Image (tube, rainbow, N blue to C red; front, side):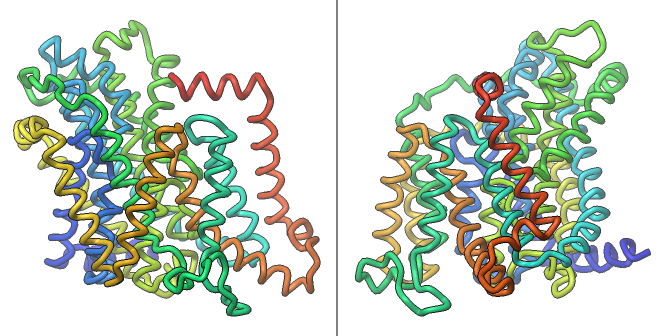
Amino acid sequence: MDIISNLGLGFSIALSASNLLYCFIGVLLGTLVGVLPGLGPVASIAMLLPITFVLPPESALIMLAGIYYGAQYGGSTTAILVNIPGESSSVVTAIDGYKMARMGRAGPALGIAAIGSFFAGCVSTIAIAYFAPLLTEVALRFGPAEYFSLMVFGLIAAVVLARGSLLKAIAMIVLGLLLGLVGTDLNSGTARYSFGVPELTDGLGFIAISMALFGIAEVIANLETDQNQDVTAQPIGRALPTWQDLKTSTPSILRGTVLGSLLGVLPGGGALLASFASYMLEKKVARLPRNFGQGDIRGVAGPESANNAGAQTSFIPMITLGVPSNPTMALMIGALMVQGINPGPTVMVERPGLFWGLIASMWIGNLMLLVLNLPLVRIWIKLLKIPYRVLFPAILAFCVIGVFSSSNNVFDIYLLAGLSLLGYIFIKLDCEPAPLILGFILGPMMEENLRRAMLISRGSASTFITQPISLSFLIASLVMLFVVIVPAVREKREEALQE
């Protein structure tokens, strides 16, 4: 009964006129950035963070969440019709989706992608509503030692699941932790790593870092690639899948939903990992005949269900534990902290309307996406013909205005420029920026919990191994790190990530 009453509270908030509008804006923008290559949800949320300052926390989170899971819908549209995945999690969808379009079955491919995404979104939202309160009850028993060990586990999991070199991922995590230490020490009042620059005593601006690494740097890198791709879309034809298509795809949708819901919760997981894992699973367990790579509809149904489920369950650790499972959730935490809200188990107790309003908005947003997805297909295809060099000046101006408006400080614009150059260098060195932003977000929280734990234990580090939950997280972290260092496992990891 508690869940029903709480959902009633959530729908009363989500169905308000203003929040319905922000939900619609979020899913519409999400679909748009999912369609346009190079503009993913991370970059879009980073650019829109300054706008959330003037919004109530509920409206801000509803809009940003809509951008995230809306991008999963948009990315599949262009992946199927023109073989251009707008979002990284839609790369797998293009394999069989575009083959289906070439066979004159673009409509069924788009239809099954929309149905699978809608079903997975609804089921994963139920999972959030049911399991998040249970996880919150457990998290309320966490002390500083448990939180510190949990964050260590989250960072190591992000390293293990990050694309590319393990050494580079670890280096980016460490750099993020160091950047998070810039500013004034709250205990002693001493300025750290400020180098005599007064503006640095307040620390580096989260908005400047996120816009630089995920906005401007990515856009500059995209300008180097050939953006003049053929966008001649295949005819859509019949928009709805046949009964046989539904019968064939239903097991894949169910498997993708379960797999995506589980992987979305893991640190380092989310939509991208879920879609790839689902495709690999379908290739192994789907019934014969298997025509994966040649236009098998199960190659669209499974990954599209998984990426939407993973996108939504990734909110569970972010809200209940305050630990981001991917870069997008790190930006969400930043948006909440800007609003003066500390993500964690106390959110559900102190701000129940925020949590349950977000849950209810996910059902509404998925319904909006189902209605919008197919009718606007032709408009999205036309947008692909806009040259990227035309979009770049607008994106750059938006980032600069956003950074300045957030602090009214010219120094942040200089910081944006310097960090954008650094982000571009990271891209050229094949260093993924996602671990850096996770380290930057978690670094100050890790330091705070480390100090609290040491104060409570009177300086004894044994507190981290005498607490059962803390010890479990540390052991899991060590096991995960040692296993991935084993040459055979490391080769398999690199092979899977390369594929």
